[in-house]
Image 1: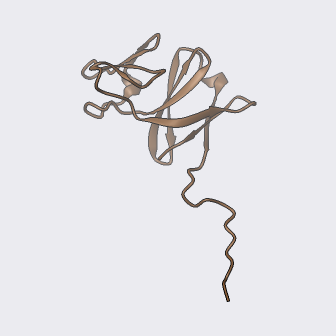
Image 2: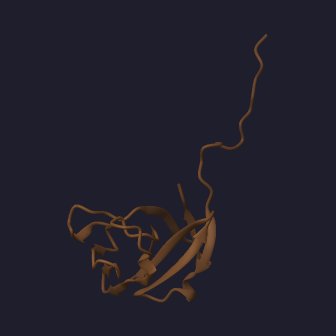
Image 3: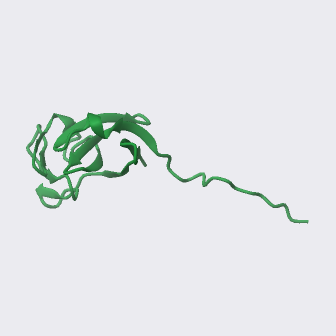
Length: 115
């Protein structure tokens, strides 16, 4: 006799966490939020919201302390630069930001999934 097990949810699926609202994150602005104990940096660029680990890959400095000029985010500690729309490094080009899944609901709620 074979036992049948019904799985209603994928246990490995990451959960979406509502963290903010687009009304609280203006275009061209950044906001640090906590998601499951991880600091996440939200960036609104021309109406698209991106989510990144709030730490520079160089020496773990908080990116929220950096400067956002257009698409370019500059880390405050050692001036490493990143394109916030692609996560790719500008200076140095070999570096990248750690990105997270991010979505904006029809009601304007911003949700993030972390790894």
